[in-house]
Length: 349
Ligand code: NDP
Image 1 (cartoon, rainbow, N blue to C red):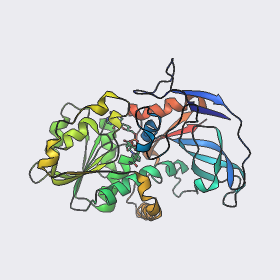
Image 2 (image 1 turned 180 degrees about the vertical axis):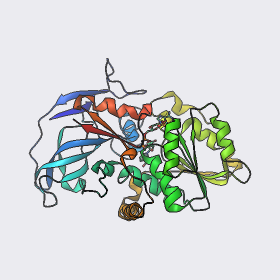
Image 3 (image 1 turned 30 degrees about the vertical axis):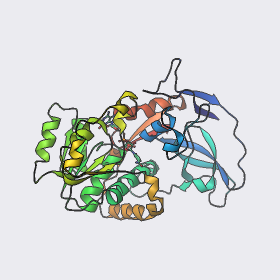
Image 4 (image 1 turned 45 degrees about the vertical axis):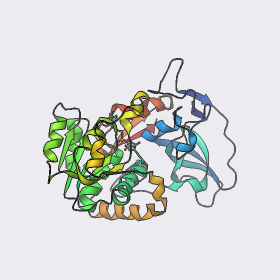
């Protein structure tokens, strides 16, 4: 099978060519599946900003939550795949599953690491299991409910609002929790209008010149300050949010994509840190896997909300990029260009 292997750990932007090319295409022989293993053919890949952390040369393994990818190893990734040979009683040939397969055309994986991807109602694509009905949906749910303890009385701000996690955070806050005001932040006007369609009271374009002013208007002090900030991006937007959270405000530290490709920015300070002290703010980081024992409960809530028409999931919730295997890294990099609305999915062609 062909697979993409890590060739060089990038400090800044991953490189598609040149002496510091991040990944190299390799051809390897796969072992025969053993008992309780399945051979799968990859159909689609999930694109996750988190994958950037797994190839970073500056983050020690003990400070990550998954083993980092080593040079020469296949790039770690989640995929949607079809079972072509099964040595497990759990799966039959022809079943579709999601699994941690890596960037490979075929993989032999433990049946225990595969989740069945059953047909979905309303013509929904099975790739939804990689996004809204999978990790990113669950991330938004547990971030808001467990980490942020978000309630209907809260004014909630969500950055990265038009992304995979953000689109669910906006909908869960507004339509499942019922928060009184939900403000989205995203990178284009078009994305912002879509986020408002999903239920946000308003969505602001952070690339607009008037962004800081617009945000101030939507969170006027002292009574209109935000209570909860769902942070997908870190950096300048986080810094600005320190000044828009009211007393006792909570920061759900989910991601910091604005700094993943810039080694220098990771060490620069936040200008408004003092606001944490004066406003008694609380920031808590989390990893979705911390809540693995409650995933079933969240998925039930999603299914119920889908039936009740509270959750909007359709073709607009995914950006599916048809990709030949040679371009898998190129499609992944689109995450950092913001070219996705909803979940960025690589569909192998
Ligand atoms: P998204 O679908 O949100 O894709 C990334 C988006 O980030 C882009 O579309 C772009 O949208 C935005 N973006 C890119 N660069 C910047 C920048 N410099 N400043 C602001 N926004 C930027 O990805 P995910 O939903 O998968 O992930 C969102 C965040 O959640 C990431 O930080 C990720 O690491 C984190 N995460 C954390 C998990 C956890 O367990 N803690 C689990 C899953 C994800 P735009 O056009 O708006 O700029």
